[in-house]
Length: 118
Image 1 (cartoon, rainbow, N blue to C red):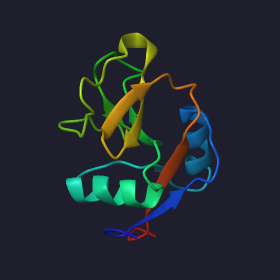
Image 2: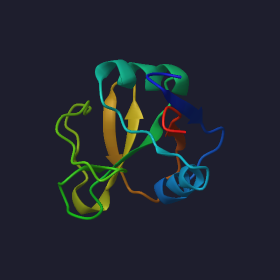
Image 3: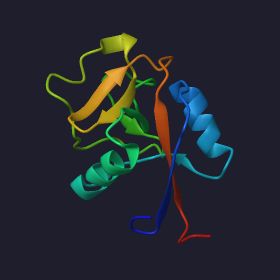
Image 4: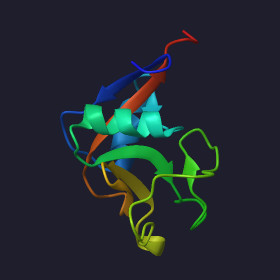
């Protein structure tokens, strides 16, 4: 729990879309990272593995948006990232930063749910 959000770290691997569906079917969504503190928290609970987060440019190439529709203003990109152009539209977060991958790749993921609004 961080800032009234509950986090779920998956024990299995799925595509970005399958991961997001898992979250939304449970009233949550893929995690949205709003601060360095949250980025560090995500890496801590993921055990340092790459995990899908709720960031994609699938709608407009190069326009990164969070799962809630908010446009990314600043991020924690890995060196040289994003670099996949049209072939890599979804983001996995690692301790070294964010990396773009094909959305069909399989990663673990993290769901986030705001329980303050329950």
